[in-house]
Amino acid sequence: MRIAHAVQQAPESQLVRTRFDPDSNHTLWLTLPAGIDGSAPHFSPELLDELHGLLKDMQDRGVSWPVAGGRQSVHYTVMRSAHPDYFSLGGDLALFRDCILRKDAIALRNYSMQCASMLHEWSSLLGNDATTIALVQGRALGGGFETALAADYIVAEEHSEFGFPEILFGLFPCTGGMSLLAQRIGIRAAERMLSDGRIYSASALKDMGVVDEVCAHGEGEAAVEKLIANHARQREARLMLQRSRRRLQSLDLKELHTVVEEWTQVAMQLSSQNLRVMEALAKMQRGRAAA
Image 1 (cartoon, helix red, strand yellow):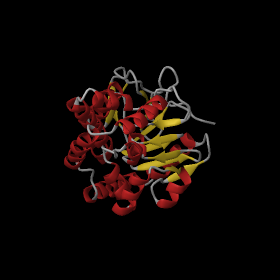
Image 2 (cartoon, helix red, strand yellow):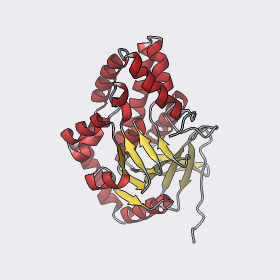
Image 3 (tube, one colour):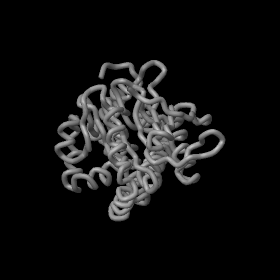
């Protein structure tokens, strides 16, 4: 029987659903929205703005959350999706294509820099004082996969799938895919995964050391709660180990910006065939094509 915990909804949050359980190891749940038409979640500029704002506000306020007129420390932050089949399909491909067709490299670069800032906040800054967990209950592709990788732990339900499809339309991950994967499996193995365009199962990535835990379909939240309960028993020691890991293998914002600059240059030179493939995937993001 589950115990009802006190919860606090952030009033400024319009897209991201938030739930803070101070009586359950100070856990904050961030739920990415599905489209109102049931379309798969992806990082629209509006969602990026809000998510980055939430993370930055937490960091600026000592990784805390408003409760009953005051604030309480956040020890664990869990990111999940409201969509039953998708964690996130990553960057806004319709926006990519529109910027390329209009030859607006500045807008494309600015959007990608916004993605890099959000990912860096989620990966590096917040994680110094709180443990971050990605709960994947469906597909995590492209920037969605990168966002999961940026967490301290990835918990995936057994039906979940992961991949970097960018190579299929002549691009590559622009917000940390190489760095984040290399931290888990090494540089050459990361390069192979970024280049093959394959979709990987949760169990395959668990065997490779990318995913931390795989659980049964529908058991994701319970698996996260169990992970948090075990972690909390030695929280201070584990947090110091996480800080040490980040000092040795931090996500370098300067490197992220360099990748964004290179990615923008390549994107602006994509062929018409590559843009057609991008358009097909953009339709999947918008819910107008079958997965």
